[in-house]
Image (tube, rainbow, N blue to C red; front, side, top):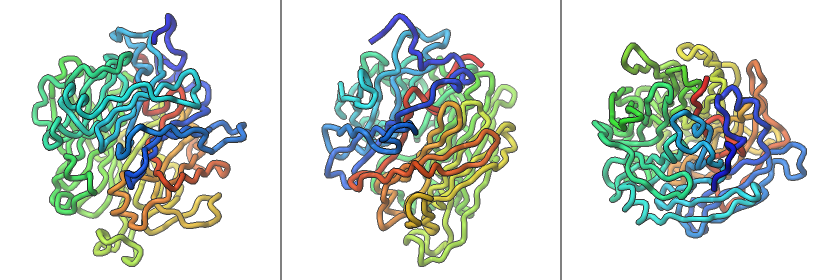
Amino acid sequence: MSSWKPDPTFYPSARLAAQAPKETLAYVASFDPARRIPDEIAVVDLDPGSPDYGKIVERVAMPNTGDELHHFGWNACSSHLCPNAPHPHSERRYLIVPGLRSSRIHVLDTKPDLRRPRIVRVLEPDEVARRSGYTRPHTVHCGPQGIFVVSLANAEGDAPGGIFLMDHDTFDIRGQWEIDRGPQQLAYDAWWHLGFDTLVSSEWGLPATFENGLVPEILLGGQYGHRLHFWDLNTRKHKQTIDFGEENQLVFELRPAHDPTKAHGFVNSVISLKDLSASIWTWYRDGDRWAARKVIEIPAEPADPALLPPMLKRFSAVPPLVTDIALSLDDRFLYVACWGTGEMRRYDVSDPHHPELVGSVRIGGIAGRAPHPSSGNRPLNGGPQMVEVSRDGRRVYFTNSLYGAIDEQFYPDGIDGWMVKLDAPEGGGLAFDREFYLEWPDTHRPHQIRLEGGDASSDSYCYP
């Protein structure tokens, strides 16, 4: 499993990673919302010179049904070149693929053929719960110490979730990461500032509050996650909480600066109870503490109630529902996916406290149903959801499904899956690649994307 040379897809800095060869493949989590047939990892051809460009070239079925593949990641990445990493000769070879609903974890080997991954190990739910103390594994990040897995609940599924560590070579679960969790109760995402010995985590809710869809009473009561937590990465102890206020519900995706000398990052709040807007917040170092402030607010858009799902009719408006964000490796551009209004936005965040909107496209949307240039003017449902950016920052890929039960709440006629690609010119702007419009197999819906060799949200770096 090891070699004497570091993996060529590892880079000491994000600056060097941006010079990497272009990706030619994507791995996409693909799930059956009806839970009747197995979920899959789909392999998509990204090479414009290939006859299969923009097509699925392989579908790797899981051994069971009902997993709800969601977020997944690599076993190893550029953080293994950090001075404190004990395993610089690991390989970026295995995909760690959890089932959010089943709590089962699949390990897929992408070698010897990157186009044809194969399952080499399955950790069953009882083993995950017994060894980690957690269930509902949600987010996978490779770090210097191993594979970090953020989970949404305890072993019984009814109390606080947290983080556990897996061995990057054997895939054995080592155990719970936290030594002292302090006031942290809810979990969602976690990432870190390696240069500042800090881990950051965000919040969603316990399984009973989302597995069958968002619960209106909990949402309107401000009881979903609305806090950030800051931890000492080395002692594994909780140090600080920042509360965005109950009106800012669902504090989700963490995107810290890739440059380890920069002590800031971005996080999205999906919806405001005050006016249905969505927001982006910057966290930053303020003296010897962390602070956060809202830097982007995206308003809801008025809409005919006849075009809206039952839970939105009385508001006569479509919330943006910012459900994912991505930060380019040079820390210059932030991509913001508005799943409700069907908009993908591009901001220049060179000054993280004063973002500037520099690009936007529309596709799908609850009321808009905007077509793709290559969809024959056919109205599309769903909207920009999971977004991924190439290492050089020139290509943006995204899919349109959020989570099976929640999809139906906002798009009651169901979601017809698709994956698209945007071109992102160096100075700003966004444009659809007319040659890349992938209609998903109607048995499944697409969710998270991982790019061959790494992408803008797969790696962390120890050198500026």
